[in-house]
Length: 210
Image (tube, rainbow, N blue to C red; front, side, top):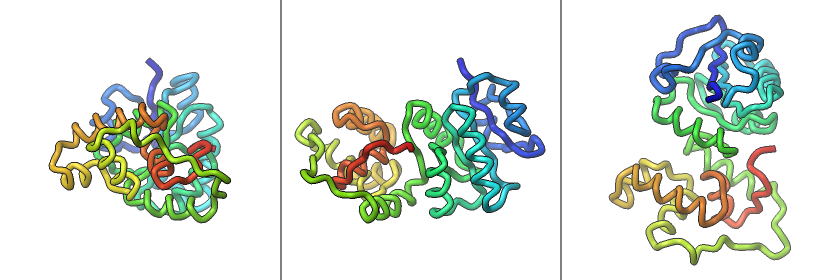
């Protein structure tokens, strides 16, 4: 199995990382990451000691390794998220994200999807709606294939709701929400909740990863 590797300056320890991935290595540089694995399953960048353009440069160098990259910020910011996505990062999260969330992010990005904090979703959609050209004949997703409950979940994802918020609203468990999402992704032919939200808002997706 290919390794997930955390690149943390000075080899700094992060409590949540070993809780999420007990056997995953932690290294101090990209060079050390390359020595640890020719092609990691994913690279996770600790951006705490980087600033401004340094973060983008670090992210671009990591993307050049050729595997999914997740940027971890001590203070996540929407503009930074968009800038990192533009250089090819596939995931963006808080440096102290919960282990369960880290595992969810790994699953998404390692299967070709894109992940960002749920509260960034609506801002991302708003920007996409302004800057992406509308197709000449907008194609709505095949919603008839969804059950009524799946449609309720999909509509809430389109508004930027998190799994926890959806579970609370629909009085179901988060496990059930995840099961519905897996079914929705398969039926609509989308990779992740970002593509689902774009499709539900009738925005052309092309690809969520440049």
